[in-house]
Length: 115
Image 1 (cartoon, rainbow, N blue to C red):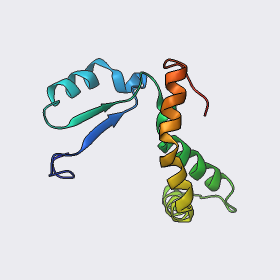
Image 2 (cartoon, one colour):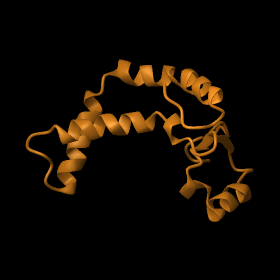
Image 3 (cartoon, rainbow, N blue to C red):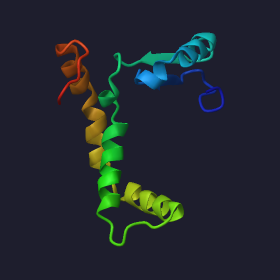
Image 4 (cartoon, helix red, strand yellow):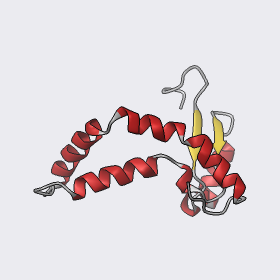
């Protein structure tokens, strides 16, 4: 974190999915809490993370490729190509959806939410 955000303004974010909230992960975060700020997502709410939407878009694009990637290197190349094809407005829309996602989650008091 100190390399990427030498200004001290970096924030660590996790979605509190069960594997990320293990005893070891929680202990590590507590031991290193002075090294960075930790942004807490609501408990077990990975759907709040816009990365899930981007992953789904890339997965859909890869599945529709003809011919499909045949090796890990082919897959890597296709993913990079498809990433470059994502319209900037799509990514901007996802970023702008975050307040709506948070409001929806608050309405259902942390349960899985639809937006």
